[in-house]
Length: 243
Length: 235
Image (cartoon, rainbow over all chains, first blue to last red; front, side):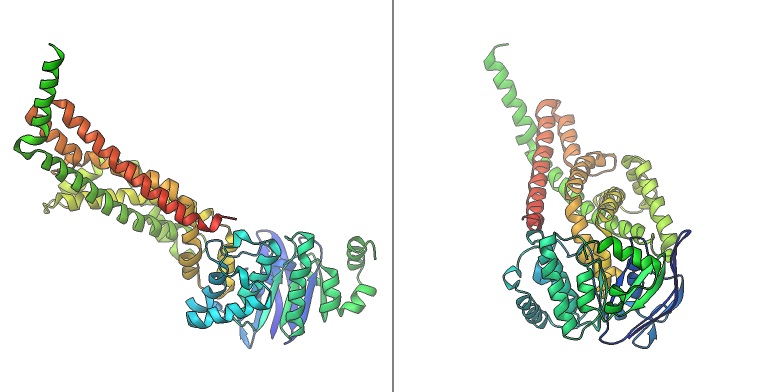
């Protein structure tokens, strides 16, 4: 579904992504972990061109999205993205947040979009909040609404950029549960996260990044029980100190 | 002079200033012209200001706008660097020297003038919006323009409303120099009346009260708008 070849990204003299290649198949749940500054968020943001890579190619559904001929706006309609800080639109109600893109892009009529939004809200138990503004919601509610806002575009793949890092501990569960549900329904997902429990139970592939490179790639069982690379071992021993 | 004759004199002057030769009509004409000039200049100022601000903001990520960005910053520099009276005279005597619709010339002048100030206010407003908002819009498949108009600008305008209100109050009062070209605005109406009655008291106070009432009205409109737009802040 997504194939990344020899991707490079620099910020000034800072080489963030070094020759990274990676393949995500339909239905994959890829979790990217690694220390801060290792380039995992940047890699994810390159996948929908929020960051423009300096070299390399990203093939999504058969077309190279880094090429000039590619209409990136069309591509992004097929790729949902969820951010660490939710990025709901504070001046719009929950309903308007969810229906804005499908309606303004003429994909659905207003009525269809609202019907769809209500279905999505009902599913995550936030039907009652449909006419509230984001300021009234908790972090967990905001993030779940951000997720269904992306789902309203019926994306082929969902990108998650540390979706639980800005949440109170008590709210992490509700967001991860929704993500797990999506995974169980077969959504293709790429998730940057520090939630090892989620990685273990949901991922079918774990990538470990350090200093701009993917230095280990494995299924979660092998990765967590038997990391090969020294840096990965060190990382896991630090964050899983109680395990 | 006893109190009675002071009172009488006041009555005579009041009569001269407002009633004789139906001079109150001159004040009304003045108020009408001041409002017309200030209102349309405000509209032009908002349009130009937002346009310039969006161009200058977009130029940061889009190299193709480099030339437009330079033109916009030149515009802001020139307009903010020269007095509005000089701009008005230049418009009247050179650029529109063949036109005798002075109100129109005044509207254009004050509109262009206000645009430069609104541009700076709006640019600050746009930059105050978290860049995550643009990214969220883009990631949903909206293009940059749609995201700007649907997501960034509505929030930016809400944030800059107090500063914009200030700007338009200043603009309204600044139109009092429009008498440098033949337009009967409120100030000029007062001047004309005073030159006929030789009584400065009523004409000047009438002018001052006229501006005060208009500014208070503007303030009320601003408050109402702010309240409506702050709906989404309540939690």
